[in-house]
Image 1 (spheres, rainbow, N blue to C red):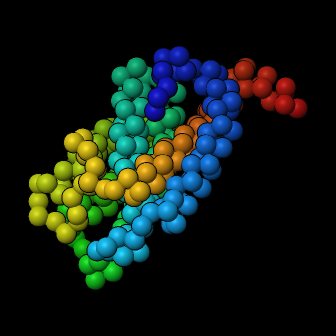
Image 2: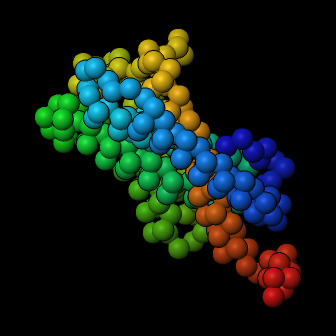
Length: 245
């Protein structure tokens, strides 16, 4: 996430910053989602090969991108938490996992709906599909491991190690269509440019930004809840509750 972690490594500094940001992030999410969905459903032309079924890609592709990117973000926070022993990094890693799991599930679900008319099957053990499924299970594993350990510090360390080990799966997802013969189509957008027409590209990019802002919203909300739970005995939390009362 685009946050200078040293400045907001203290929960007492991060909590109000996240609260001030939430209304703006939520408004941006709603606006860009509405624009992206409208452009994807009504402005973008029908694909000459896939017909109307291709429109699910406007949700599927951004969801898949976010599922991979958020895992990297989660692993980065986990690594910072291990190296610098910062509580805020561990809390952000914990807050990121559920949103990443949602996007991984959404990518798998929308991919199945696209695959049924294109491939004639809801699921195939394709390299990219299988590695994305593993990513989803990694998210679940990180959350389950954290919840299974009562000691907070041990839970942070154990889940952080699993997150760091699992990050190797992200490049496997991305390069799977290049390393193996797969049913999944290759990338239409990469570092060399895009093969998509602009009328199709713009809705996808707008929805990607919308999903990114949504990630900020959900992660900030969960992080604030996590802060209140962990810091409930801190003096600044007591003062905050007194001021609200």
